[in-house]
Structures are given as structure tokens and as C-alpha cells.
Image 1 (spheres, rainbow, N blue to C red):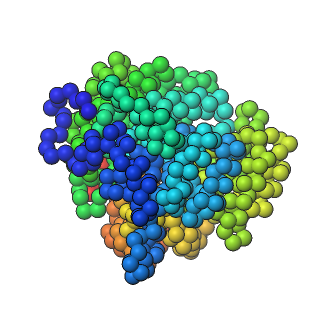
Image 2 (cartoon, helix red, strand yellow):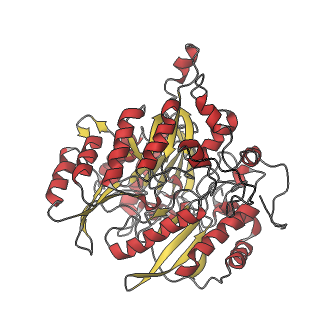
Image 3 (cartoon, rainbow, N blue to C red):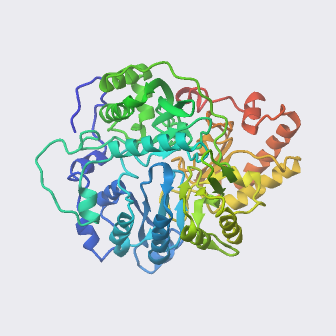
Amino acid sequence: MSQEKSPYIVEGKLADNERLKGESRNLRGTIEQDLKDDLTGGFTADNFQLIRFHGMYQQDDRDIRAERTKQKLEPLHNVMLRARLPGGIITPEQWLVIDKFAEEQTMYGSIRLTTRQTFQFHGVLKPHIKTMHQTLNSTGIDSIATAGDVNRNVLCTSNPIESELHVEAYEWAKKISEHLLPKTRAYAEIWLDGEKVETTEKPVEPILGDNYLPRKFKTTVVIPPQNDVDVHANDLNFVAIAENGKLIGFNVLVGGGLAMTHGDKSTYPRKATDFGYISLQDTLAVAEAVVTTQRDWGNRVNRKNAKTKYTLERVGVDNFKAEVEKRAGITFADSRPYAFTSRGDRFGWAEGIDGKYHLTLFIENGRILDFPGKPLKTGCREIAQIHQGDFRLTANQNLIIAGVSAEQKPLIEKLAREHGLLDNTTSNQMLDSMACVSLPTCPLAMAEAERYLPEAVGRMESVLAKHGLADDSIIFRITGCPNGCGRAMLAEIGLVGKGPGKYNLHIGGNREGTRIPKMYQENISEDDIFAELDTLVGRWAKERNENEAFGDYVVRAGVVAPVIDSARDFYD
């Protein structure tokens, strides 16, 4: 990796991930050899990390780990794959291919929609991994760079209503994704039987560098007033500025991120900083400049402080911004005005300005599977078989059936209702709740999240009803660990797993997703959490101002102090 000498480079012994990236021959490692080893279902230590750059995480079913140990068997190793799907748009034809693979060649049979606006396969055993990549490739999808120390799947506001503006923004999301992708041929060689090309030309990776980035990097394109991608969870955000319905440029926000480490106060969530406005023609140059500045200045010694948010705090926002301007050959103009008014998905039917209809379906936890009385997966398949538009995955784990003609609308609705995909009895609170996957498959999980969410929402609904607020809701999110996949650190109420049945309780975020919640109670049980929430919701019901949201109330009432500067007051 080439780095200019700079006072902002962190000196010291490099993290071991830097060694394995440097020795990986541009992400090849010995993955091919591991695939041929049928004595184990897993990968060696280095390849365990390297397959992430190819879009996979090695996992095992933790529910049966102890029993397998008793039987002197290794854990039931398998991989989770996250597809690369900039902007979350997918055709019905692609959906049917994905559905078939999930049904026939995964342990769980499900398609999981995620907060990264894409889908995941869970439970793919080693003999099926190569087939999985080739199946995806056959329909125009890959999973390169959806995990690992690279720019990951680029999100874009799921906005089929203002169709022309969305098309423009979506095209930029795709361009940014392609521009920042790894240039190595490792993915094609290993998974698609691509021809191996030996070259002495350097660098192989002109943007990412041959050691890639210090840590994961996330990018979004967002169309105000919808903040459905949660800009403050991401390293780099392009906020669309439009005039007369046409995209003219972007405000650029840098350095957001939610992950932290329990007990380590040098880690914290951070909101993104607004650098200013750029015109459209500078978009790719600015994206590249932000990435290369983070590549060269990010902390490669301590991975816990390696993300862009920590680089900004360490070197100073002004210095980072000036370096981006220098590398991109631009000067940021003053930010153009914009406002976020909401970030939830708009459920049910909506008509776009193009005369097409769009149906947003709530998918609990994003898990598409045939459940008792709710054959969601079969329903999606039957819709895909007749649908003439496209599907749009949202960053809130939901699904939009987009581009429906007036003639097809009754049939699409009939299929959605028959299969439990469209259910008018879903509460407002459930619609505003979200969880990460967590147990049993995530190796980092400390507590339940996806499996606990229905019970937790039920208890939340009971608390609201008790205080006369049954039709109200609170942005409520649960994560099984502090890594932030369920974006609990942008919720009005966020539960962050500490251990079995124990969570940190954070409150005080807002509905727009522009304020980080503060820890209110640490390491408390589920019963204690809802006892606290019962008291707080009771106060909110009696004392709130007109239309005042829960998160705004607890800050105004002094229950918690607002998190203004997370690097300094998140833990105060």
C-alpha cells in the first residue's frame, strides 16, 4: 500500500489484519485450497477473514454447538452471504433465482432482507458455496465487497414516488459502487472459474490500496426528506439536492458510524459531519478522495479505532476536509438547505408521478420464509412470477413491489393478502421496530435480537396501551451486540445486548434519525427494562407537548442529556 508521509499516520505495530491483507495476493489467500478440504466445513484463520471481502461470513448454528461438542463434532460451519445490490433494486427474474437457491441449498430456506438494503443467504454449507456464487452471477448479481475492509453495498433512498429523481440518485449509487469496488480478479478466479491473470503492474488497487482500507466503509445516497438509509450510521453520504424535480448536486456528510465496544470509552457512535455542497460532476472524485484519505490516515494499529469517524476525531474535521478538497481538486461550497422529516418506510399502496403503483410490505425482521399461517416466501414467489415491475429492498428490512400497473394492482394485492405479506392488523409499534439477526447464527451475538423482537414489541405495545397510547409508536431497535447492525444507536429506544437476557438501555434519539440516544441503564434484565419503560412512557403520556415524540420528551424533561458531540459526551 502506498502512503504519503503524513503526521496523521498512526505509528506502531500493525493489527494482524494488515498482515493477512498484505499477504493475501489481493484477496486470494488460499481460499481455493480450503474449498477442496472436505475434512472440515470451515476455513483456516486467514481465509476466515478473507472470505469477508468476497461477501461472506463464516458462522455456525450456536443452538446446537454444545451438543455437537459432546458428540466430538466440530461446530456446524456454514457461511452467510450478503449480496451486492446498490440501491436495493432487483428484478422478478432475479428474485426467482434467489428464491430457488434459498429453498434448495441453504440450511434455513429463508431470504433475509437486511439494513444494508440487500439480501442475505444464511446457512450455506461449504459444498454449495461455489454454486451459490455462480448462481448469483448467472442472474447478474455478485457479493464482492459487501463485507471486509472495503466500501460496502451502497444504499439509496427507496423512493419510487418521485420516479425521475429516484432514477438519477439510483444511477449515482450504482456509479459510486462500481468506482470504489476492488479491482482484483480474485472473486472471478475463485468463484466464477475466471482465467488467472498474472501481472506485475502496480498498483492492483489504485483506490483501495493493496492493503485495502483500515476498516469497513459504508456509503449512501439519500433523497430528503426521507432519511430511510440512516445517514448518520455511514462513513460517506451524498444528500441529494434537487431543483424542479431534477438532481443538481449533493451535500456530502462524512464520518458517521454506530459501532462501539462494551467497556471501551475510546469507542462510540458518531454522527456524520456535513462537509458542504458539490456539483454532480465532482461526485466520483469526492467519493474517491474521502476513501483514499481514510485509506492513508486511518488507524491500522488499533482496529477498534480504525473507522473514518475516529480518523476525523483524531486529525480534526478541518484537516480531513482540506485533504479531501486537495485530492479531489474541488472546494466544498456551503451546504444547500435540506431537512429530514422521517425515515420509516411508507407502507401500503402509493401512486408514483409516473402513474405506476408501489406496494410497500412490512417484513418482520426482514425474514422471508413460510411461517405457519403466513407463507411469505411462497407469496413473494407467486408475485415474482407475474410482476412486470421490480422489487425494491429497503434499508429498514422491508420490501417494495414497485412499478405495478393499474391492471395488475388488484391481483398483486390479492396475492399479498392471501400470503400474509399485507396485513392491516400490524401495529404502528411493530412497523417502527427493528432488530439485527443475532442468535443463533451471528458469532458476535451476546443476546437475542431477531428472535426476541416479537415478544419485546408485544410488551412495548402493552405499555403504550396501558397509558392510553395504543395508536402511538416509538422508534425501537434491538441489537445482540454493540456492533450496530440493527442501528439501535439511532433509535428513540435502543437495546444493546450484553449477555443472555441482558441489555444496555439507551433512550433519547429522535424520529428523524439525527440524534444518538444516551445510555440510561446498563446491563439490565428484560423485566427491568420494561419496568423502566412503563414509568417513562407513563410520564410521557401525562407531560408531553402536542405531537412530541418519546425521544424528544425524555431529552426535554431532563431524563437524559442530549448527545451533542458523541466523542465527548456520549458517556457523560
